[in-house]
Image 1: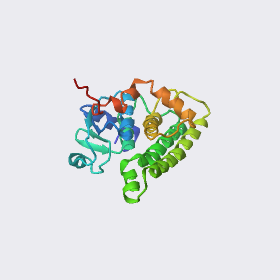
Image 2: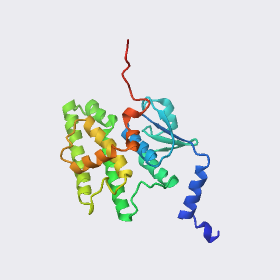
Image 3: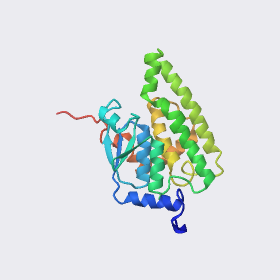
Image 4: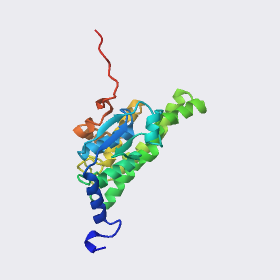
Length: 240
Protein backbone atom coordinates (compact mmCIF):
# COMPACT_ATOMS: atom_id res chain seq x y z
CA UNK A 1 0.00 0.00 0.00
CA UNK A 2 1.40 3.41 -0.88
CA UNK A 3 2.13 5.98 1.81
CA UNK A 4 -0.43 8.51 0.61
CA UNK A 5 -3.26 6.10 1.38
CA UNK A 6 -2.09 5.59 4.95
CA UNK A 7 -2.15 2.37 6.93
CA UNK A 8 -5.29 0.65 8.11
CA UNK A 9 -6.90 2.59 10.94
CA UNK A 10 -5.07 5.82 10.12
CA UNK A 11 -6.87 9.20 9.83
CA UNK A 12 -6.40 9.13 6.04
CA UNK A 13 -8.30 5.85 5.74
CA UNK A 14 -10.96 7.01 8.22
CA UNK A 15 -11.62 10.17 6.24
CA UNK A 16 -11.88 8.15 3.05
CA UNK A 17 -14.43 5.80 4.58
CA UNK A 18 -16.50 8.70 5.90
CA UNK A 19 -16.56 10.28 2.45
CA UNK A 20 -17.77 7.00 0.97
CA UNK A 21 -20.73 6.93 3.38
CA UNK A 22 -21.64 10.53 2.57
CA UNK A 23 -22.50 9.82 -1.05
CA UNK A 24 -25.89 8.19 -0.53
CA UNK A 25 -26.46 8.41 3.20
CA UNK A 26 -29.99 8.47 4.62
CA UNK A 27 -30.35 8.89 8.38
CA UNK A 28 -33.43 7.84 10.35
CA UNK A 29 -33.53 8.43 14.11
CA UNK A 30 -35.86 6.04 15.94
CA UNK A 31 -36.90 7.59 19.25
CA UNK A 32 -39.76 9.39 21.00
CA UNK A 33 -40.28 12.88 22.36
CA UNK A 34 -39.63 12.10 26.05
CA UNK A 35 -36.33 10.29 25.74
CA UNK A 36 -33.31 12.24 26.98
CA UNK A 37 -30.83 10.00 25.14
CA UNK A 38 -32.67 10.67 21.91
CA UNK A 39 -32.77 14.37 22.72
CA UNK A 40 -28.99 14.53 23.07
CA UNK A 41 -28.61 12.87 19.67
CA UNK A 42 -31.05 15.35 18.13
CA UNK A 43 -29.02 18.22 19.56
CA UNK A 44 -25.81 16.85 18.06
CA UNK A 45 -27.47 16.33 14.68
CA UNK A 46 -28.69 19.93 14.80
CA UNK A 47 -25.31 21.29 15.87
CA UNK A 48 -23.74 19.49 12.93
CA UNK A 49 -26.57 20.59 10.61
CA UNK A 50 -27.16 17.00 9.51
CA UNK A 51 -30.64 16.30 8.08
CA UNK A 52 -32.44 13.22 9.35
CA UNK A 53 -35.86 11.61 9.47
CA UNK A 54 -37.57 11.42 12.86
CA UNK A 55 -39.27 8.04 13.39
CA UNK A 56 -41.52 8.04 16.46
CA UNK A 57 -41.63 4.86 18.56
CA UNK A 58 -44.94 4.32 20.37
CA UNK A 59 -43.29 2.36 23.21
CA UNK A 60 -40.33 0.11 24.01
CA UNK A 61 -42.69 -2.86 23.98
CA UNK A 62 -43.15 -2.41 20.23
CA UNK A 63 -42.29 -5.67 18.48
CA UNK A 64 -41.29 -3.81 15.32
CA UNK A 65 -38.76 -1.72 17.23
CA UNK A 66 -37.36 -4.77 19.02
CA UNK A 67 -36.73 -6.36 15.65
CA UNK A 68 -34.95 -3.24 14.48
CA UNK A 69 -32.94 -2.81 17.68
CA UNK A 70 -32.54 -6.01 19.75
CA UNK A 71 -31.21 -3.94 22.69
CA UNK A 72 -34.73 -2.56 22.98
CA UNK A 73 -33.63 0.86 24.24
CA UNK A 74 -33.88 4.26 22.62
CA UNK A 75 -32.64 5.78 20.46
CA UNK A 76 -31.40 3.91 17.42
CA UNK A 77 -29.91 5.49 14.32
CA UNK A 78 -30.63 3.75 11.03
CA UNK A 79 -28.15 4.49 8.25
CA UNK A 80 -29.07 2.99 4.91
CA UNK A 81 -30.53 -0.08 6.59
CA UNK A 82 -27.78 -0.53 9.18
CA UNK A 83 -28.67 0.23 12.79
CA UNK A 84 -26.51 1.72 15.55
CA UNK A 85 -27.89 1.74 19.10
CA UNK A 86 -26.78 3.63 22.23
CA UNK A 87 -26.68 7.41 22.07
CA UNK A 88 -22.98 7.84 22.85
CA UNK A 89 -22.00 5.39 20.13
CA UNK A 90 -24.28 7.31 17.77
CA UNK A 91 -22.78 10.72 18.54
CA UNK A 92 -19.24 9.36 18.16
CA UNK A 93 -20.24 7.98 14.77
CA UNK A 94 -21.71 11.35 13.78
CA UNK A 95 -18.45 13.02 14.79
CA UNK A 96 -16.51 10.64 12.54
CA UNK A 97 -18.85 11.00 9.59
CA UNK A 98 -19.42 14.74 9.97
CA UNK A 99 -16.29 16.08 11.68
CA UNK A 100 -17.14 19.74 11.10
CA UNK A 101 -18.26 21.43 13.22
CA UNK A 102 -16.81 19.26 15.95
CA UNK A 103 -18.67 18.57 19.18
CA UNK A 104 -15.37 18.46 21.08
CA UNK A 105 -12.83 21.11 22.08
CA UNK A 106 -9.60 21.18 20.08
CA UNK A 107 -7.35 20.77 23.14
CA UNK A 108 -6.82 17.02 23.82
CA UNK A 109 -7.10 17.27 27.62
CA UNK A 110 -10.15 19.51 27.45
CA UNK A 111 -11.64 17.06 24.94
CA UNK A 112 -11.13 14.23 27.44
CA UNK A 113 -12.72 16.33 30.19
CA UNK A 114 -15.73 16.97 27.98
CA UNK A 115 -16.06 13.23 27.38
CA UNK A 116 -15.75 12.59 31.12
CA UNK A 117 -18.54 15.10 31.81
CA UNK A 118 -20.77 13.58 29.16
CA UNK A 119 -20.17 10.00 30.30
CA UNK A 120 -20.99 10.81 33.91
CA UNK A 121 -24.41 11.86 32.65
CA UNK A 122 -24.94 9.11 30.09
CA UNK A 123 -23.46 6.16 32.01
CA UNK A 124 -23.99 6.98 35.70
CA UNK A 125 -26.94 9.36 35.92
CA UNK A 126 -29.13 8.69 32.90
CA UNK A 127 -29.82 4.98 33.64
CA UNK A 128 -31.65 5.80 36.89
CA UNK A 129 -34.03 8.03 34.92
CA UNK A 130 -35.36 4.99 33.10
CA UNK A 131 -38.91 3.99 33.92
CA UNK A 132 -37.91 0.33 34.14
CA UNK A 133 -35.49 1.11 37.00
CA UNK A 134 -38.06 3.06 39.00
CA UNK A 135 -40.72 0.42 38.32
CA UNK A 136 -38.40 -2.26 39.74
CA UNK A 137 -37.95 -0.22 42.91
CA UNK A 138 -41.71 0.12 43.35
CA UNK A 139 -43.14 -3.07 41.84
CA UNK A 140 -40.48 -5.58 42.94
CA UNK A 141 -38.77 -4.04 45.97
CA UNK A 142 -41.94 -2.43 47.31
CA UNK A 143 -40.71 1.15 47.62
CA UNK A 144 -43.50 3.73 47.71
CA UNK A 145 -43.49 6.86 45.52
CA UNK A 146 -41.83 9.18 48.10
CA UNK A 147 -39.08 6.59 48.69
CA UNK A 148 -38.42 6.22 44.97
CA UNK A 149 -38.26 10.00 44.60
CA UNK A 150 -35.87 10.30 47.56
CA UNK A 151 -33.63 7.61 46.03
CA UNK A 152 -33.68 9.41 42.70
CA UNK A 153 -32.92 12.82 44.24
CA UNK A 154 -29.99 11.38 46.18
CA UNK A 155 -28.21 10.07 43.10
CA UNK A 156 -29.11 13.12 41.09
CA UNK A 157 -27.50 15.30 43.76
CA UNK A 158 -24.34 13.18 43.77
CA UNK A 159 -23.91 13.45 40.02
CA UNK A 160 -24.82 17.12 39.71
CA UNK A 161 -22.42 18.07 42.52
CA UNK A 162 -19.60 16.41 40.58
CA UNK A 163 -20.60 18.11 37.33
CA UNK A 164 -20.85 21.52 39.00
CA UNK A 165 -17.40 21.12 40.57
CA UNK A 166 -15.86 20.04 37.28
CA UNK A 167 -17.06 23.22 35.58
CA UNK A 168 -16.06 25.42 38.52
CA UNK A 169 -12.49 24.11 38.27
CA UNK A 170 -12.08 25.10 34.65
CA UNK A 171 -9.25 27.66 34.40
CA UNK A 172 -11.38 29.91 32.22
CA UNK A 173 -15.14 30.27 32.56
CA UNK A 174 -17.05 30.18 29.26
CA UNK A 175 -20.61 30.39 27.99
CA UNK A 176 -20.85 26.65 27.57
CA UNK A 177 -19.43 23.66 29.41
CA UNK A 178 -16.02 23.54 27.75
CA UNK A 179 -15.65 26.56 25.53
CA UNK A 180 -17.43 29.34 23.70
CA UNK A 181 -19.51 26.99 21.56
CA UNK A 182 -21.73 24.09 22.60
CA UNK A 183 -20.65 20.48 22.20
CA UNK A 184 -21.33 16.97 23.45
CA UNK A 185 -21.18 17.93 27.14
CA UNK A 186 -23.87 20.56 26.64
CA UNK A 187 -25.97 18.16 24.54
CA UNK A 188 -25.92 15.70 27.45
CA UNK A 189 -26.52 18.31 30.15
CA UNK A 190 -29.66 20.02 28.84
CA UNK A 191 -31.87 16.88 28.66
CA UNK A 192 -30.78 15.96 32.19
CA UNK A 193 -31.78 19.40 33.41
CA UNK A 194 -35.21 18.68 31.88
CA UNK A 195 -35.35 15.41 33.83
CA UNK A 196 -34.37 17.15 37.05
CA UNK A 197 -37.19 19.66 36.67
CA UNK A 198 -39.66 16.93 35.73
CA UNK A 199 -38.94 15.20 39.06
CA UNK A 200 -38.94 18.45 41.07
CA UNK A 201 -35.23 18.29 41.89
CA UNK A 202 -33.84 21.50 43.42
CA UNK A 203 -31.29 22.94 40.99
CA UNK A 204 -30.52 26.11 42.96
CA UNK A 205 -27.28 24.63 44.35
CA UNK A 206 -25.81 24.32 40.86
CA UNK A 207 -25.44 27.88 39.51
CA UNK A 208 -22.83 27.05 36.90
CA UNK A 209 -24.98 24.29 35.39
CA UNK A 210 -27.95 26.65 35.36
CA UNK A 211 -25.96 29.31 33.49
CA UNK A 212 -24.85 26.84 30.80
CA UNK A 213 -28.35 25.40 30.52
CA UNK A 214 -29.82 28.88 30.01
CA UNK A 215 -27.25 29.74 27.32
CA UNK A 216 -27.98 26.51 25.45
CA UNK A 217 -31.73 27.12 25.46
CA UNK A 218 -31.20 30.39 23.59
CA UNK A 219 -29.95 28.40 20.58
CA UNK A 220 -32.20 27.10 17.81
CA UNK A 221 -30.31 23.79 17.71
CA UNK A 222 -31.37 23.06 21.28
CA UNK A 223 -34.90 24.43 20.94
CA UNK A 224 -35.65 22.25 17.89
CA UNK A 225 -34.46 19.17 19.81
CA UNK A 226 -36.74 19.79 22.80
CA UNK A 227 -39.49 17.24 23.57
CA UNK A 228 -42.32 19.69 22.89
CA UNK A 229 -41.00 20.32 19.37
CA UNK A 230 -41.22 16.68 18.26
CA UNK A 231 -44.07 15.44 16.05
CA UNK A 232 -45.20 12.80 18.57
CA UNK A 233 -45.40 15.24 21.49
CA UNK A 234 -48.97 15.00 22.88
CA UNK A 235 -50.91 18.17 22.23
CA UNK A 236 -54.27 19.17 23.67
CA UNK A 237 -56.97 19.32 21.02
CA UNK A 238 -59.48 22.12 21.15
CA UNK A 239 -63.02 20.82 20.85
CA UNK A 240 -65.83 23.09 19.63
